[in-house]
Length: 133
Image (cartoon, rainbow, N blue to C red; front, side, top):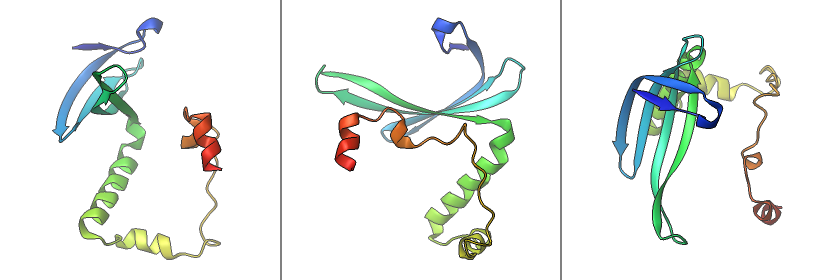
């Protein structure tokens, strides 16, 4: 099974494994792919069926997350902690200890210029920004 990504650029990524999960009005796709150097990574795609009133047609709104092997453990741990909190309403002990430390004891986060992106920077409408201010 092959999937074309960035067809105009000629980049082809083979799907190694794919799992589809239907959940209400959403569908999640978990696709394992390989980089050019044959390192596996995961794409998680959320797809929602929407209706365009202007065109009178349905379309699919998709959101994609790329997760690389070196981040699997941290991602899985964070997801587990968040789900546990939702299910129990209790902050796990190791998270509670971090939350109660005074700010001066916690080390300052290191800024990475590649990830310093605000959601507002991602294609927001200028008129929408004006109304927020």
